[in-house]
Amino acid sequence: MSVPVPAPIRAARALALLVPAGALAGAYIGQYGFHLYPCEMCWWQRYPHFLALALAALAFLRAPVRPLVAVAALAILTSGLIGGYHAGVEMGWWEGVTTCATTATQGGNPLDAIMAAPVIRCDVVQFAFLGISMAGWNFLVSTASALAILFLIGFGKKA
Image 1 (cartoon, helix red, strand yellow):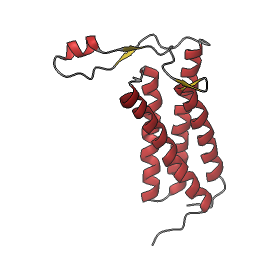
Image 2: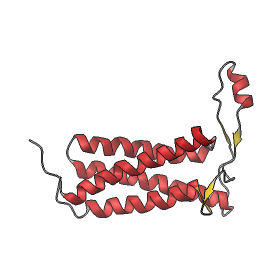
Image 3: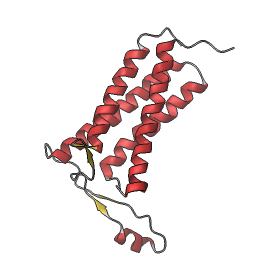
């Protein structure tokens, strides 16, 4: 017998699943569809979304729902804050990491693949929409969504 989940918790759980799924889908569409390869900090933003996605999916399968959704929200918030830091690096507000990332995806000799891979700088905006970089959008959407999820789980009864 399953325990009924209050509407605010259901909404928070759905949001905790949809936000990282959408963020990761957008990142991979950009990467594989438009050749917008991720830099090191772009990867840092993806890792918390992977965790949030797994936790939110688990919240659909088992109880208690609230702690799983809460930790998923914190993971989404973490990705958003990393996105904010990355956007600041892109805007030149502060210095970022000194390493650059490469994407060695070609077959054959691994050394040739590494040497032929593009070097992606963390301080260069590859794509912007409405004047905001992808890192900036991640900051805005992930941070707002995480706060909304945390707000919603505060209203539901224990589930």
